[in-house]
Image (cartoon, rainbow, N blue to C red; front, top):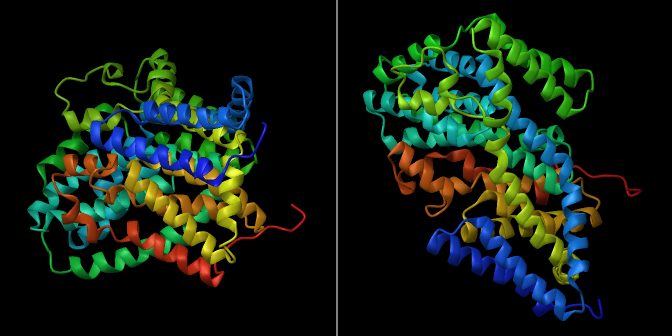
Length: 464
């Protein structure tokens, strides 16, 4: 490199990337991965201006991706475990008992909890909303609960459970980008997501007292009947959960723990559900699907949507996004653009509160621009990481804030992928459910409160 980039050159890489994403993704529905490659091409042009050659850029990209590989292994293992847990009946059992014990007199609170449990079990907020969520919307209509109000509790529960799940792709991605342990990241998120959810539960409880009735819903009963038709739901379906808990308690590494749990799930599914054991191993790659059920006739589309999940192939989109995003980040970092931007920003940041605020603003800008959580986590995470290190802050503070200002907010963006998905699946508009997704927007408030008071802010020793 013959010279450092100017601030205009450095910041232009970020601004051009935002422009490309807004124009391509929001305007023309071009896949975000292709747009990141296009943004990388511009960054490569800036890198060439400062004297770097293609070999230098390859080195930067390779170095950046090398740091991501351990977490990519976890993400692929998540696909394996979701598929095998569907095969064993572990995930369906969690959903079954959640719906079975629904309290109609506390519908909104129950809806939040049920969707949270479903998301924790499956690692996907979308899957929770499109299965248990749709059944709950039918019950809400029966109880004369406003659809936007019900959708708000359902979406909030789905997103909360997604964030608390070690099977979630975005949760793993946030841990990957900030270089923290996945469970340390989840524990850090408790500081914001749990208080915000408690406030939401209080709101839903008092608002929901005016609605009474029963849950004799044909849709929910059909789902329960079909789950018991497919699976033998008994004590044995809990073995995969017990296995992974024991492995982690014995301080076994995450990926081996997940693989051992998946193996136990395949054994349980083949014996308990009378499934073909060969199909059990196939779930590790392509996930569980309807063809693996001996008698799969007359299953509803919603039940099929619920059970057809998992497999390493289900994680290819997030893995490809990581590769494309890290290609951009690796080039920008190698060209010295990150250093120049950070030097400029750091001059105006003198406290933890200001750093948290800057991270949130960056996250919100990227959310509004991209409408995709993964881009927010990668770009803002890479940009801000070194500043947290310099202020001797534990990196879980960053990973948590990335989720608070990115993943939790994304359902509230009408043109974002999640906003569009929930609108289509639940039959409501964002303006109808926005105010009722209480935890989604309160997490930012708690993050700012902690940042400026120091409460819940974990620091590291100076020697690091």
